[in-house]
Image (tube, rainbow, N blue to C red):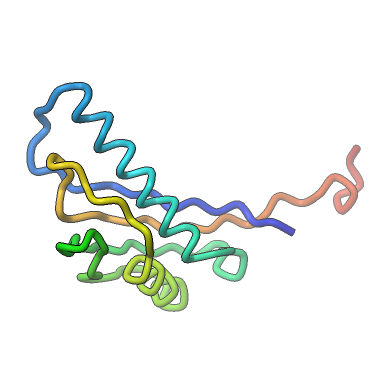
Length: 119
């Protein structure tokens, strides 16, 4: 059974200026980081209903060092590991912020129609 899981990457912005192509490059970078972290994390099924906020700072090599976590300890430990060990991250565009906030909140999978008697 595949669980529903999302990691939201919110980069702390130091300035809101920039042209549309710059904003597009930052958005693409954020999406690539989110995908790499989710791939490293894997299934969030066993953490369903928990939450964790991870604050991290980008390293010179493009990876992230976790500065702090807040939330449910089991999920935060797994989230810490996935953020700090995410691989194949693209180099950030010049406008990308150095600090990122990753929000982990795995959801419980929806019951199948056969399991609920519906359908």
